[in-house]
Length: 253
Length: 152
Image 1: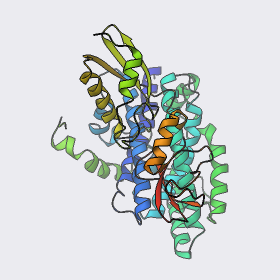
Image 2: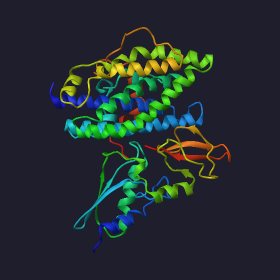
Image 3: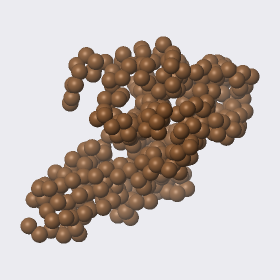
Image 4: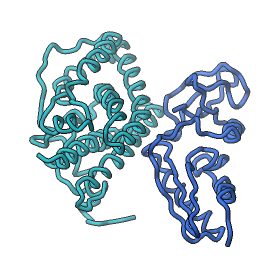
């Protein structure tokens, strides 16, 4: 694999994570339990979609075939997506959405802090901007997980169920492969495995405050960030997200 | 026509922010540089938040304002690094925000006082408000809700 191929793959991973999770979160717009949470979710989604424009914009530039961020977002099919499986999992109830958000945010913020020191100044620039937003996201998702975990017996039960359901999807965020090896050797991005210890420490602290028990299993689903096998949920999501460009190719407004 | 860079900065200071029209794009600190080369003016703009929907409107408003003043060759450059920070808000902008009912950002992470009655007894309702750059707070004395400009 050449450096540029690996760089393109890496940028798709960054941009597809924010795109797919951003779209998922935006599905709450108009449906959240209270108005403040509705607004908070919409704002989080907006930040993630904004970051997507930067990551996929750079991906198109690195690929050098004239594809824009919009082309990459709207005209690829499920097997071309490089997001982790966690990001595409359905929203479930509000607690499940916030658990997914926290597990992702905690990894996202650790990664962006390192990427702000990237040897590629475009990557460093995007990360320095995004980390400010994501620091705010993790503050909220962490507080919400603690509030609902250590809340009523009903909210506690739902949060524990969400953690049990989503736990097998966290491992994929920290696996290394050829792409990440090349990125690390070039000083562009750290090996994902190098972030695991800090993530574990933060998550253990949070779950302990939330009175939730982390499942005793290291099993990890794989296949999202390599594009080898996405879960069935991604295709269904894309039929909604890409509908307009698929029905009216090239439509503009 | 002969224009100076200072004059252009003055014109830009009359372009209102589309979401918070009491402050200008210069007050907001998103205009980072104005370069004049012959008849060509290049304005470097830094977005506040990555997904802020006002960003493209702001670029269009800047271009329109300069064209209205007779500049025909206007270029807008989006610059993301260094990232925008609320430290770049002007003192004039901070004062105008408060007059308008939006508490200006504070390094402590919350508003100093209620922009309506001046009380220091304020509490956060939600981390996010009506736009990405604001949070939602409430005064526990006058009981009015208000926006707080987040400090980033």
